[in-house]
Amino acid sequence: VAATAGLGAVACGSSRPAPRFRVKPTKHVAAQDIGILNRLLDLEHEAIAAYEAGIPLLSESDQKVAEQFLRHELAHAGELAGLVKQAKGTPYKPRVAYPLGHPRTAQQTLELLHRLERAQIVSYLWALPRLSGGPVRAAAAAMLANEAQHIAMVRASLGQPSVPEAFVSGRE
Amino acid sequence: MLSRRELLTGGLAGAGGAVLATAPAAVADTQVTDGALLSYALQVEQTAVVVYEQVLAMPVLGRESRALLLEFLGHEREHVAALLSALQALGQAAPAPVSTARQARAVLAQHGLSVDFAKVHGLKDAITLLYDIEGLSQGAYYAAVGLLRSSRPLASAAQALACEAQHQALLTALLFPGEIKRSVPGAFVEGWQ
Image (cartoon, rainbow over all chains, first blue to last red; front, side, top):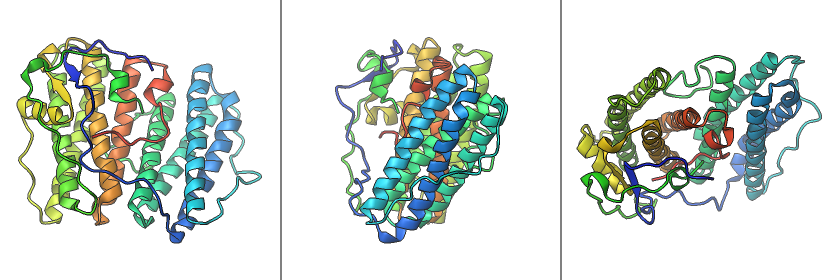
């Protein structure tokens, strides 16, 4: 990525200081997390289906955004499936069909994506205190935060305030 | 997410007379307390408030960007209030507040950022500075979510992390409208410390 700003005010040393707190990478995922992770995975599959189906209906500029978000959802699905496997579980596969309705316009497609991003945020927030390990929680939070970025951009395309609340709940 | 180094070009090392403090050694997670995690997040958030206030006082912002930054400043203040409440609920005293530009510079210096607010001359400079502080906030909350032992502050930390991620995306979009790969580059938002 190209550097962007000729910044005289902020300077960097040769290396970033070591982090004060380290979240260790996930090594062990508890079996009790399998159901929660699969529930999140199921929603990721649904979002993937919606983005894949909806992208052709969007404007050219929103298509680029949606294609980027689709890549993210695919990455989330891969991460969640990997965590389920680490817990010696079987990751849910995508369903044959999802109840996505019949959006026919860009606006309807954006509204569908907004609804699904909200559902994902609500589910990640539901899952976080139920997941048993800190590293698994951190991974879920990293995906939650990305979904929050998605919804902010979708809301902007819908002409709504992008960041309406200081604490993202998925209900705003 | 873009790293700070990927977003920034180089600047003037040591500019502004900020003292480059030695970075604290990483703390093994067995030693981490909830109070330490929340205090750290509070310090970063208070720094963010000061930085937003400093940037908003500069004549570098247009009407749209000023309105957005004012909104984000309000969010940072809400995060500060929540962290103070969480510390109080733990029976933990809050650390010394970060409320001046000098104190904010010292905190930023601990993270390898040497800042001179007087040298912020344009929107790019201002946004890049805010981009940095949003990344630090994310890093503090990401660590909190991964390491907190008590469940009560967990949800708020995750919700604030998500909000900081939104801030960073929108700030980047101000500089690079229509460039989604810059404003929402990665699938996992962890910030940095």
